Length: 139
Image 1 (tube, rainbow, N blue to C red):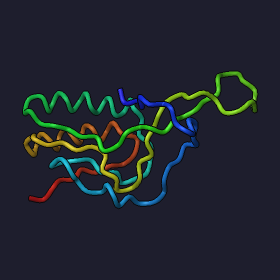
Image 2: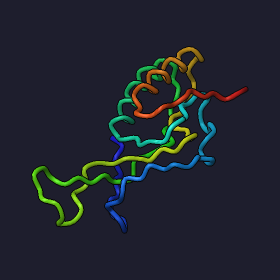
Image 3: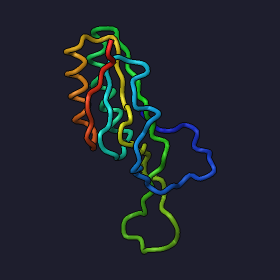
Image 4: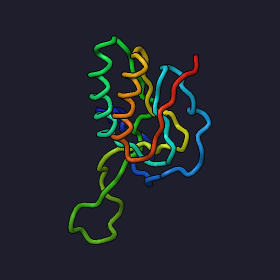
């Protein structure tokens, strides 16, 4: 599962941040030939990443391809217990997330034929909670 192993850090609890700016660093493919790029900002959670990984594993196993995630959920989400009065500090850590910016490449694959890779990426695109588009490397 996609959860940070080293939980020792200075600020364990953070605000849920959804960035409004564009991403210029990870906007292009680095490792694979095909990928998913975000059009909208949003957050991605570990269960979404796990469902994408399981689906991609079935396709990639046939062709001995490879896949890369360019994001990792290392920000914490907190939540207060049910029926607790207001105040008394911030709640316990409930889960993890990663804030995705516009134009950020999320997932890359390599080693699959073009039609199979586009089909896989369209299935993976439906698992995410924000709008995405499919990108490919021009060769």
